[in-house]
Amino acid sequence: MNLHEYQAKELFARYGLPVLPGQMVTTPEEARDVAASFGSTVVIKAQVLVGGRGKAGGVKLAHTPEEAFEKARDILALTIKGLAVRKVLVAQAADISRELYLSIILDRAAKRPLIMLSAEGGVEIEEVAKQSPEKIVRRHIGLEGLRTYQARALFQPLLEDPKWVSQATEILMKLWTVFRENDCTLAEINPLAITPQGRVLALDAKVILDDNAEFRHREWDTWRDRDEETRGARLAREFGLSYVKLDGDIGCVVNGAGLAMATMDLVKHYGGEPANFLDIGGSSNPEKVTAALKIITGDSHVRAILFNIFGGITRCDDVARGIVQSLEASPLEVPLVIRLTGTNEDLARKILSEKGLAVTTSMDEGVRTVIARAQEVAA
Picture 1 (cartoon, rainbow, N blue to C red):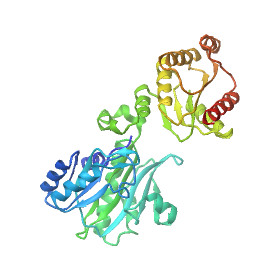
Picture 2 (picture 1 turned 90 degrees about the vertical axis):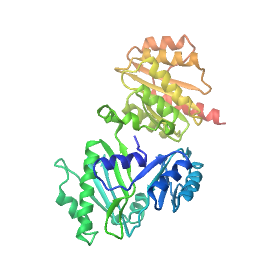
Picture 3 (picture 1 turned 60 degrees about the vertical axis):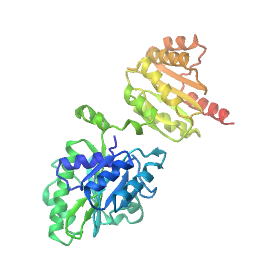
Picture 4 (picture 1 turned 30 degrees about the vertical axis):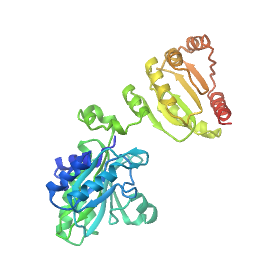
């Protein structure tokens, strides 16, 4: 789960990270009032869960309360990468003499947290990695955790003033605590700024939380921005399905992450493009199957749907009943191809055949068929 910047900064502040005062608002009038209460230059930032806000005009300085009203009004009228701006952060602005990039990210390949530090702050780290990878310092954090001397050693080559090094070291240690205690997959400060007065500040904040740890954090449900969730993502979360939208036109409903990955690979192997990763799990019931079809059919790019079920823990007859219930409630407008094999396979085939639905037991045949059907629709 991604947090908005204002939420990430609130989380940082709990752990003593130096963030400047700010407040989330939803109207230009509120922005004007907050700017007036600060009595200084403020920065107005669009709160949307995508990058590139600055390039899209979603980050602006305002020197007076009236200017804050105007800038907030303009930003609240924006749509950034398909997301309407419904709220903005009004925060005190700061003079900056230097900018760095600092983050802790989960390195899945190494199975350890990774610190990333660069003197090229204030820009997208992806661009730095692409253009000048040597400018990024990387250090993994082992089972023993992060020690203060290790954090200090990272900053000493980049910062000449010992006072800056001391402040930056403290920030990194606190960022590590945020990452560890809140089950983060990313905790980022960009920029980590140094002011002309010598203060080191976290001027921006980005946090991504591991959804698998939500059961340990009751407050996460209050942090979730349902306005920015797609209908598919919302349904998947409500029914406990694993769903990732992709750019293709072959909708895939599969049980088990491994089979889902193999299905997507086979779709691409035969010249198709998967529209999603959707895993209904190992103990699916008809309601989950119905929800899965609602998710798939909510994607206007889908031209054909493939059910690829290998019945182990999952019972094929449960899946079959879910398909029948869903089609009775809402007939499909795109072709449906079904591959079922495993537990209660014969009963599942009987249930589906009574409704005039054909079933194959061959994964290759199912994939080739669904791609052909999608091509027919496209033609």
